Length: 104
Image 1 (cartoon, helix red, strand yellow):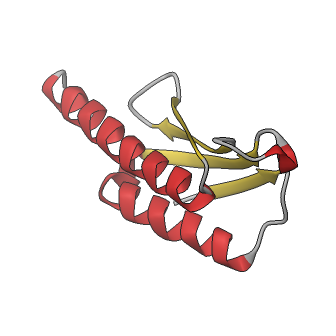
Image 2 (cartoon, rainbow, N blue to C red):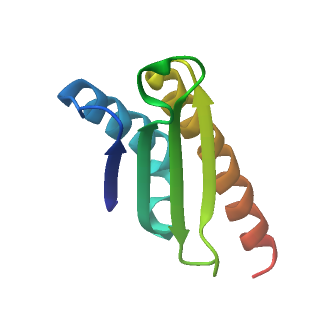
């Protein structure tokens, strides 16, 4: 699976990179044959001000769908934003894959 990870507003550490890869690979692995690309952007929305400003946006390009699937989650903890985005994209891609099979 082709994963592209971008970051903005903080230093990307090995731990964050590993967390993103682990969560997204686990979330999308069962649908990997239908996935062309996955782009993940993790961002600190408002810098040192704090608050619910850590975001994880996941975009998945599927071979059976023209438009990409896009999910964005915000949380005060970046790791939880990543986990919530992975959980949501897993459910969304699974639902779309089931729908696609019904229409074939």
